[in-house]
Length: 370
Image (cartoon, rainbow, N blue to C red):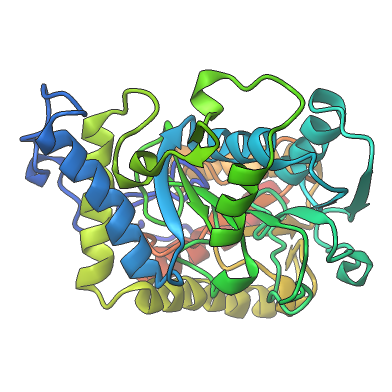
């Protein structure tokens, strides 16, 4: 029978993701709007975005945080173009975004000494093949595959190379060993449900040392430059952005950070994401027609949860369309490069009650299209 109760919030997109519970745009502090981002009021808001991020995430001493252009993609490109080339590079990927970094490194930067370690959707490559003398580029959480790094044990503490970690759908939802990471990037619109267009770049002291000691062989666009006269542009990590940011997006991000603090910090957002995944795992265990794209629970993402169905690709499309027509689930189709199926966001802004309410609708939709 068709369920009678619908999720209070049917937004399960993997990016931009659902806004936090209780979000009200009219409650944002809009005093910065219409003001210069370089004025004291604007710079203070941007500086707070950097400093509060470091505090909430519990970053090690000496790690720096900056707001940069063009979302997580811009942050990753900025880091790769500025720092790669000093030594050989190992690139690890198991889904489309990680594959994109490999393409940029080999076809755009045209680096020659590159080793690519890849795996199919739902799996991870062999981390034992990583050379700690090399720079390493990888995505912590495969947003389009649902496979994530279980830990950072494979990264050597005494490594000579830098680790470049695209963590956009992992930060605030998964435990991360910051001491093992030198360059970390993410965007606001994932686990925090923030707005798009801005990236976050986190650098370890080792990454800063690379910036100050190495000059790449290629020219750097203005929006990629983080040094001046061979020294780090420290103001960039205190709110002096390279280009003009949307201050409305900045205050929206600050609202999300305040929410994280109010519910108990990053430990709570991680726990919420894990609980959401557990709810889906219990449902999948009881229904033979649905399964996880990632069969190994140890590497299964608790944010971008990818599912396969006992249906043809056309039936999957009909399944998704039915749920959208009933206004119970929006944007839950698998990523265009991934196998046909579902991708349900389970990050911390998804209330578990909404996820539980969605589950009977999944059963109903399956019965309609099978």
